[in-house]
Image 1: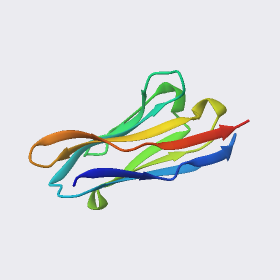
Image 2: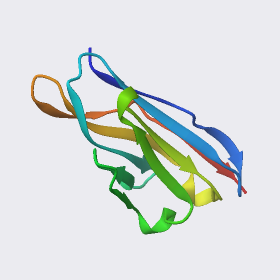
Image 3: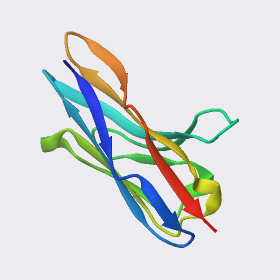
Image 4: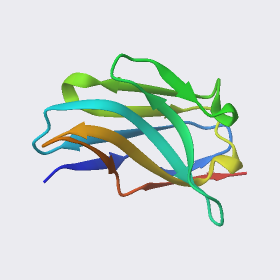
Length: 118
């Protein structure tokens, strides 16, 4: 069964750091773009950062300079290093990836809670 498994969320004080990880598992023949989205209570899900298979990155303006996305292609894993966290970063963070299985398909992780206290 192909799935994305996230880890690394938690509670942190403003100004602190967290690192999220997301590993793709199952019968996978390749991974295209990978990314992180977040959804705060009462708000729509939004893109946080994304990275192509070649390493090109794109960030939401609200996290530029504070968050860094990276990936380990050998491990089919994407990371999100979050520094200088703010209370407005509080949300459920979801991993997303385009995986080559029988064809190419878009997958989502189960979500991990990030809470930043002031």
